[in-house]
Image (cartoon, rainbow, N blue to C red; front, side):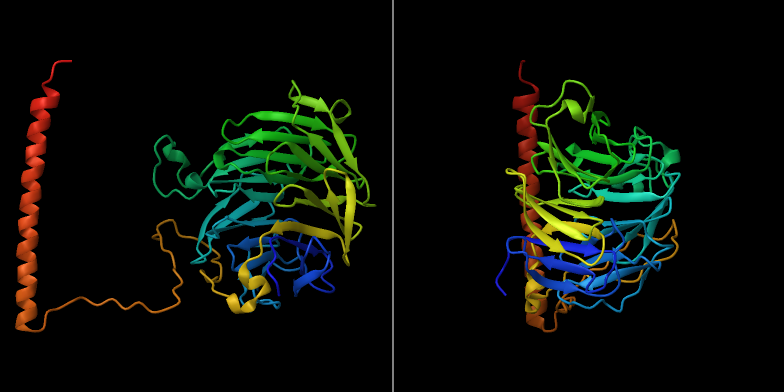
Length: 416
């Protein structure tokens, strides 16, 4: 199969034909599928370039696929309960799962449970990492949007500038309580700590926050409840999906002068086509195409410049997730499967005193043995090398002493 620069991965809540489908967005043909179960909305994620994960809608269990295999792995990754949100760090190091109002954090290489966070008061609906993995953002049914620092969350000792009482019981870096109703979707832009966080809620508003300053940058109100959000790579537009089936684009190239604005007073482009709520949105990597999935079991691909729907991908149930990605080599050519990590079962509890460990996957054994001289010639050679090294060390010590004396005489004593 020829290599593709970009593919679109989708899933629906029915799981009748397959769980995940990989599409060619240019032709609308399906390239490969991943079977078994169905995916809960907001839980599709990748562990590096090796695995797909998603939450099972009926059991406290994760769906696991190797990138190069269509059937699920026999590996059983159990969670404390049915997941409402799931995400993995960009490097595939940590896995986050939300069960009701709690967020559990595991190390993927060892399965160790590092922390359970409980700062939300109602079910956590969405989780997203920053692109550099330094922070993650959670949104819940309590209307809160919380930003967490991974360094603080994982800390086992005091960090300069961090209260001692916070070690082991971390608080979010920012707590944004601007939404009046449940948060339904989040999007974190590129930029690491300089990234922006876009959130939408049933209170009919879309809000934009800054991670580095913690400020509310923009709040746009709409005449309909909002269910999905995404932003372009250049952050010049916000795309939101409504419960009425409309996809609305807010142009940020000429930003408003006030923080709180209405969609009626802004440059809004409305894309109409869905007959039910817009459940998920995804932008192509170059920002030229927008894909929207809806309750009407269709994925629509839009050409942003013209506002035209160029393709419709039919599904068997409400679309639960969409993602544009550069396909790993093993996705379309199974012969290129070269994993750099191995998943293991997840721990149910954690011990604060357990030392930090990490498992590394090696494709070939690397025996290490200490060199012990066996013959007289080898012994003599080792002695000569040791004597030569001692001479070099003495020579370097003399040079350092001369440099020190020179600096004292010609630099520190010079007149300013």
